[in-house]
Figure (cartoon, rainbow, N blue to C red):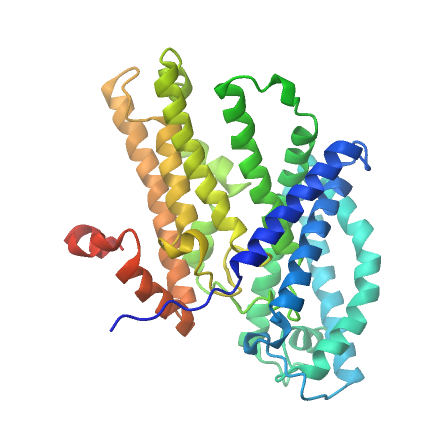
Length: 416
């Protein structure tokens, strides 16, 4: 008897509402330009509208606060201001640690992060004012109130005897993930926002123009929803971090795919992308150009659909609930599958344009990058398999997914 597919941590309705809200926010920003050229506040507005819509639906309709996975029990009440103050001290200590790391590392003096710092300056006073009552409210209903914030508070206050070091380690890993990815994704979102708000739709009169617009729009939506996921991680809405990737291999293969590491690795070791791309290859055959471009957009659409399916809980290197609907009902890792296939269609390394050995080299380098994503998938599966829901989901996909035939191919079965 095959396993049943577990219920997805984010319902498709919630994900759809999130996309609709994000689209509404972009429409308002284009029509009214309430923030002028301030892309930081424009991006924050889009995130706020999207998050408000998602959380309202998930709390009122989905009753996310009542799920056992929140670790909350509203039938119990154990208020403790001393415990709350310890957690608040832990939060302050965490923010101070992140600020110190941003100050220390030269990477974070780059212009890309300027709007992120402006975001922090705008949000931090309100965040700290709201954090104390929120921590107290959540703490009084927690089944196990000595969480990561409490562990960090104990560390900050020098009370090290009662520390749960594994829990503290997971807490620090989680904040490390947020601290690394949020400034990067928010910077990308602001840059994409600036390009989107000046698009002249009257100029979109050809497939080439529409392709460029839709391709950029897909990644704009992606980084927008991803930024929201890193910014808002709340136990009350069940979008909190359950666990962070515990292995060095998992961290290495994930971080190598992002700046500033990708600039070094991609340029020096995996520069698969030549000067000859699909557009130049098919420019003189309009029908094939349109078909090939549509295939790329389809793959990119699947990639961003995978992000949309997370609602407000997307985050690399973490477990924040198992997603089983949307493209995840077809296969594990649909975003990785779609993204890696799209790179083959975009860069066309298999098309001979120059010497044969150069063509072979580009193909092998792209296969190397595909291999990194395969390792990312494997480390993620190993991490998530600590959750019985993921084990059941994985078995269901193996039996019913679109790639179930791989099990009958010995070589591919070992890779999968």
